[in-house]
Image (cartoon, rainbow over all chains, first blue to last red; front, side, top):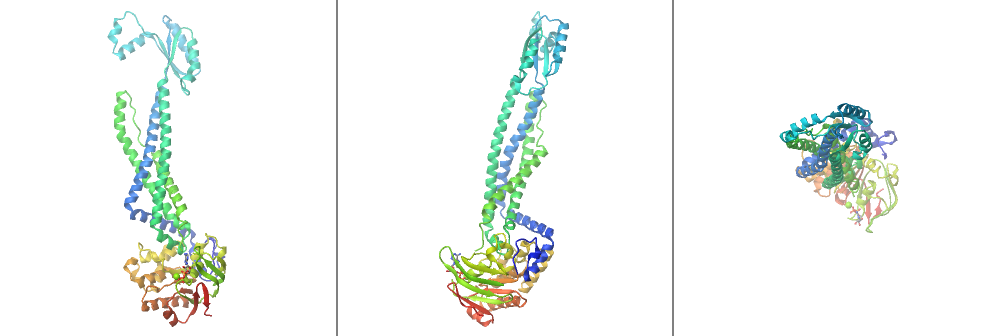
Length: 332
Length: 220
Ligand SMILES: Nc1ncnc2c1ncn2[C@@H]1O[C@H](COP(=O)(O)OP(=O)(O)O)[C@@H](O)[C@H]1O
Ligand SMILES: [Mg+2]
């Protein structure tokens, strides 16, 4: 009999009994798979033998996952809405009264050639009046006027509003310098406000997510620590008959991954259901604003990321726990 | 097979487990270790299993100086030893079969071979019909035999037992000892710590006597 460091080199092992147990090592893959299967089965067994605390752990993890993920999905989709609004962001170029129609066409042509201009449209004062009458509900009042108080406007769509109003200043100056232009108005405030609010919410969600991930790791670590304690006797016996630390650890790592998987899937379902429920209200509100905006629900790549991330967190939490506790349990 | 060279073991609380012990046990021997409670019998077995480390001196098992083993190597040492320890008994939430299979599962034996070997071991201790039972449903003697089946299922070259008949009546104790003799007959080195002198005296094997950590008779 002699002692080998690793099963990898059966030849190193010398006489007698050792030679007999060599056999097992002829099937390294099978035995590896077999022992993983055993660990997975043990993990399931453990989860099933403590149904109440298992369910509780999974629920806490579910909430810790669903909260930041839900917020982040919501913010993403509202951002999407912001992008659409940004596309509609416009600069209004008011034309001095008395500029001829021909001159207005020249101005339009000149504006279209400016860099930074994606599109420009002339809305002459008659058209503007007609539109105003139609939409403002003040049509009759305007009909009382003997003249058209509205100016002609060239509506300019900037090719980019990256950087906000400040970045559009040079374009505004160039537009204002055109002969016969009375005033140039950039109305980006609301886009900037939305961006600022979303940015703040994103930070908030990031911070919340970080806190909840830490909480989740603590819950996981504590659950695994209790699981280890509850199997103390078994660990002692396993170590006594030659179980390596890795072998002892493995079922607990499986438990971590299993909890992660369950919590991830639960959080996904919860978010999918929650977003669908929220969507009913969102669509109602949006329709009041003549918008067909709707939440697109839980995108499945996000769902997969959620589940994978949850499994990884479960693994990390379990790893932290077994690292501390398994080595400390030694037969004596 | 086993060699102790001036081995002393002093526990952190100051108790002397073993005191300057020299000992040689050859492959294939069957040896009893006796002595009063506290004489150091369990300490001796624990040193062989690397459950304790000597304070001084060297322990060799199978030609390997245990001092040179790192903690990562210890499981591989233990896989080649079968142990029947009083306080490390069966797992009560597992069937007899699963208890006995443990050493095989640990060393990655393929499932079909696990089944074959577990049944062979249970057959040897006369408990083949109990493989599906939970240990709680067994008598004390049967539980001890399940422990023995677990200790031999992976065919170790060395079998250690610490007070294996501790809680059993004389008839059952004799049965258990007969089992150990059977294993010894097929070449397994057997080392049994026991203070059951009347029982040991009936059996014709080498007997070591410890007193306060010192070897007072070597039996050779
Ligand atoms: N884990 C331990 N910590 C401290 N002292 C111990 C420990 N184990 C044994 N001892 C002491 O070592 C001596 C030998 O004990 P032990 O080997 O258990 O004897 P035996 O098995 O012959 O009864 C005793 O004095 C005992 O108190
Ligand atoms: Mg003892």
